[in-house]
Length: 334
Image (tube, rainbow, N blue to C red):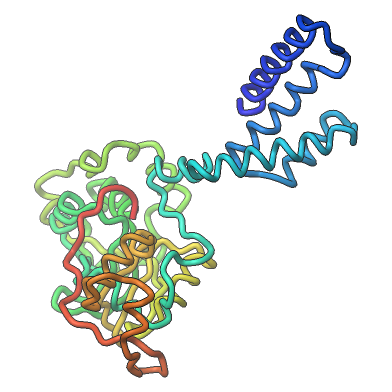
């Protein structure tokens, strides 16, 4: 569509130029509406996508004529510069429309190595137990919109044993009633093979859980609500975890290079917080640092005026005050 729209606009300009030159009895052999359409297609495509060199090569391959190289390059670069003055690229806008938390290659904020993941993590976290009552799982799914939940050993313990996603919990609740009514202890003593394999769970999720978030919890009978199920066969037993003294800048790099969606923050074996991609977006990260570090305005000047303090592991962090962030209820994907 971008090439077609640009070609139509270029053709209109070219035809108007040809008619104007002809009406004034000037030489019109240099006015080629087809060439205007070609340049218009490249310029419009470049202004929307902000491609330059690769776009120029692609457009030249359509004609195979190097004589069009200079006007095409001029039009593409001009369109890109003008578009950069007014708005961001189309693909950037699509990320915002779809609420996709995209992290740039370089953080928006500077000097993140002065902070630790403790400054931006969400705490306390909503957890589930390895052996959890179905009614508790339903309550968590209905009252929160988080995408994943840390799995702990016992209700009164914060010892981390794994991570399970919201979609997996929804699919587990769709198991046959006879399976859900099986005692959790006997389930653990059986084979470690799950009732459903991963590809089967994905197919069920794609077919049955494309509804609004508040309508996705599968209905269960009162008998199933009182049952206790084991999440051991389905949880991720080795999620990405970092210590609470881990550098914030290194955590940002890990999210980008490893393609992470969640990162658990632990103190020894105890889970104390969780970080999602949304927590590392510029505005969210700035608000967290302002609140947890006591900075009235997060800026380079305010950072330069504070003294770094050594913490465990040889890292450096600014002293901070205030309690951790309370549980969030952020709409959209986390």
